[in-house]
Amino acid sequence: MKKENTPYKNRRSFLREATSYGLSSIIAMPALSALLSGCSKDFLDRQPLDAITDVSFWETEEQLKLAVNGCYAYLKGKSETLQDSFVDLERCGDNIIYPPLSDYLSISTGNFDYNLSVINNEWVKQYAGIRRCNHFLQNYEKAKGVKPELLARYAAEVRFLRAHYYSFLILFFGDVPLITKTLNIGDPELMAVQTPRAEVLNFVLQELDAAAPSLPPTYTAVDSGRITRGAALGWKAKIALFFQKWDVAEVAAKAVMNLGVYSLYSNGNTATSYKELFTYKGKITNTANKETILARPYLANVSEHNLSRESWVPDQVSRFSITKSLVDTYLCSDGKPIDKSALYSENTYAAIFQNRDPRMIQTVLSPGTAWEGKDDGDQDSNPNAIFNLPKWDADKKGTVTGTGYYNLKYVEPTAVGVYNKDANDIHLLRYAEVLLTYAEARMEQGTLTQADLDDTINKLRTRVGMVQMKITDLNVWGMDLRTEIRRERRVELALEGHRYFDMLRWQQGNLLAEDVKGIKKSLVPAYNQVYIATIPTDAQGYLIINSGRKFTAPKNYLWPVPLPQKDLNPNLIQPEGWK
Image 1 (cartoon, rainbow, N blue to C red):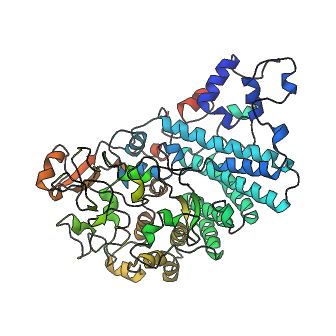
Image 2 (cartoon, one colour; image 1 turned 30 degrees about the horizontal axis):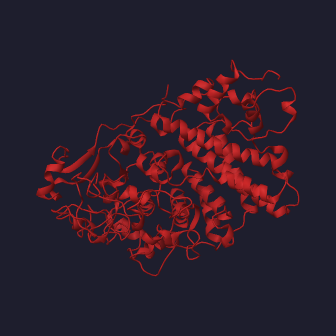
Image 3 (cartoon, rainbow, N blue to C red; image 1 turned 135 degrees about the horizontal axis):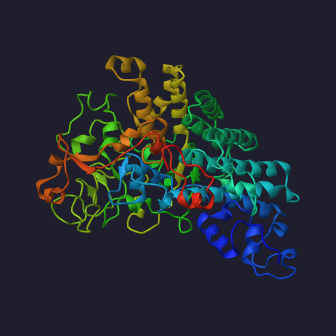
């Protein structure tokens, strides 16, 4: 067998490093298969016996569809690992906290470096998806008897997915290697420096543009969940907004609005429509849901997650304890913030939830709500069917809070009592976000009008029965328009995975350096005070749940190149501030 053209000393060292790097994410599979097989004189002339190869695979429409489906496998959703999860990105921001030490907490507190495993996992995961996409795009035209329009659609789906995966790489890491083909051992790209972030961004936007025309606006039920034209345009708007390409974001968002396909989900009840979207009734297979543009779908007994139980885990601390920062963000029902409204009261725990934006009690668990967290913070230790007070006693008889607040969004009560049995879809892009993107892009260009607000943000408020946003009112009340546009985004998209990226693009990293706080200590009943005796408070008496946080600019606006990648390719350059 001929000697491999590889910079590694021997095959074993190559395989060891390939495994740690996820090198199969970018190297062509036949090359790796050859290394894994024994050496015989004519081996390279034969098809491997243990794998489907390019020689035999790219022949039929069914094989082509299987290959496309394989590219979807890397979409983020809900998982216990950050690189696979979208909603868990909330733990990197300031909306929720799970106090025990974790990779999420390390990132949100700024106490991490290039050794953090989740950083390498994110890099490897996205390049694994990109490899799948590159491999497909190099081979799909070999299939016979496939209608040209279907061939074009499949290619467009995969081009979207590749752009989607590259989006996360440049959001997290900045400059990254731009690889558009499957690589073989010895290819110079394996040891190349990164492509500038701006160049990769242009590639992403161009790919989304190229994909959109070949994607249908909608699918029949059997193909529900596949990439649509709206997904390509909507994701383009989202990424353009992050990189302050306001005009591009506006045009793309408007194009989605003009498709005439999407509308906000409603069951006719302002008190439950928003909440219901995140339950089983809001799955993409429900024809009443015209809002979800892109989602990671889940199926009962086939593909499930654990979000409900993590929120109300009946014998441990909630993994999704909502912070005072998020709770304080919700306006009062008169449209004013809590420090300006006469409607706000903090005399009791229940009073905090009264006279607020209706989305608050459809996102944050409020007193009087049915729950499956067993015992709450009342004086006995018996299970409660109705939630009234937060629980601080870690006696394993009910869900303990980390802050005094619990998550309600995405919670399916029937799934709380069992491990990993959630089947509600995870929304990656909703029509609501497109409307918010359009409003923000117009605002940043100085062209936002009241009519624009009525077509976007006020539709979101109408759905829940919230008072309308009026520019004239904001002026009278001394409220800043940009602040309120951003507040609306935080409120509408809370607990969905967007907040961390919004903080980065708004250059609000300083907020991550602030202490994470919970409710006022005085609101905890006397019989529970013993359980919070060691938790410090600030000057106003609010519990300080997490301190010692830091955020160094510009360093922490990007993640470092993971150490395993730097070891494999010394030519990779760390972002500014990372050494």
